[in-house]
Length: 110
Length: 111
Image 1 (tube, rainbow over the protein chains, first blue to last red):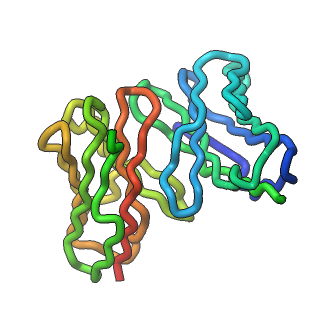
Image 2: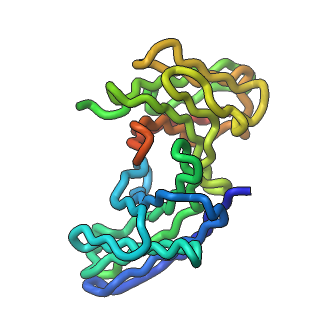
Image 3: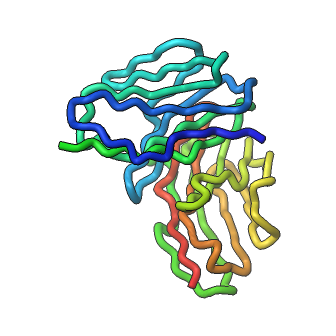
């Protein structure tokens, strides 16, 4: 059973703080990992992808991957109220279809 | 690029009726996916196609659901007959084998 787990939240952080979102996965052969952001009533949009162990930075976002621990995280620096959304972790175990986690709802308080 | 286009955006139908959801993927993308999203179950993969060929339909809940991709620019998901428990948001997504691009979704309500 391929599973992806996330804390459901809600995760509340004050504006300007660092938000840390975590994800674990069960399929050791997975090679690619993605973070999607989904605003209420909207479709998921891709914000980060990561394929190698370590950190990958893109603006205020940093994705971290540890394949040995089967763990991937997303850090959002200088959180803004506009970052309030549900963040979905996705794992691509076979190079074709994704398995999505249940999502973590983030609320950034002004 | 217009992105992944889904229609209709909203559909309200009575139990027992046939429902057809439509999707136009991004030109050049060779993978197409149909997902269903509910509060209880999150995003569930229903079926996906590669080069118009169905690859995995193990997520299709039952025989009432069927999907087709007659060409590279069009796919349909059909539910016949529809039931209230089918109420959800149905997303179509396409990709080149990497990150997905989702359509805006179809919100289906079966009463």
